[in-house]
Image (tube, rainbow, N blue to C red; front, side):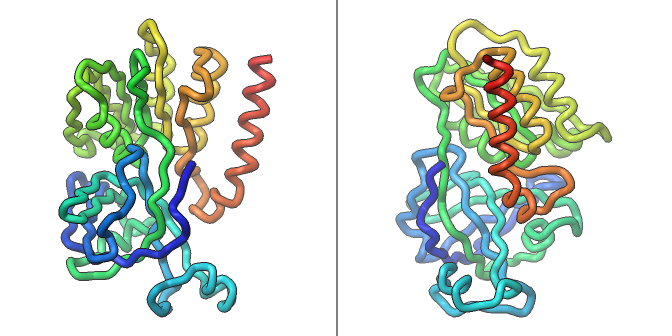
Length: 277
């Protein structure tokens, strides 16, 4: 996964929107966004920078210097979010933030933002875009993966075939998803079931079309692990044809998940290798 060097970009909130009850859309602008290198991937992401309450940092913000010069409790926290859209001509960046009331760090922060407020972020990074050589595409995820799925669908060429599964809380959380491709879109409603249960069931039951698939599967780490095993071991999807990762993990904050993610991924890969052998 590529990521821009840890330069901190300052942007202004131009407007906010609420496309669904659990989604806050931030449209960001400002001089520092001009020429932002977005476009190579459909899963471009940035990391918002959150200083501790009451702290402010001198501009330009230098993350390396902050970690060198300040005690750990004064270091900022970072939260990664996928870029939903980028208007290079207007230098406007759109980011969707999942919001569940007072839970978490970024959701309540996004809900309180107003036009004119400043936000800080690093990036963009990114690694995936739908391959034009694939015979068909599989895209699956929860709300956290929805911006990347939407961006990928917009990138697909006319005539491409895609099967898409998105799990959300309920009907009110569905969004219009546009694509020039031939898309079979299935919305899955959690309706009180565990996160990922409906998604795993739907992808497991899918009858794969003939030909080579390019798959994008992201969201909560527990069900992503199940789907990775399904695709790699049972369906034989080559690793290079699969973009799959846990964006978040139930029961952990972002810092906790990031601190354990490498070990988690290594264990999953070892289990996968053993199963294939």
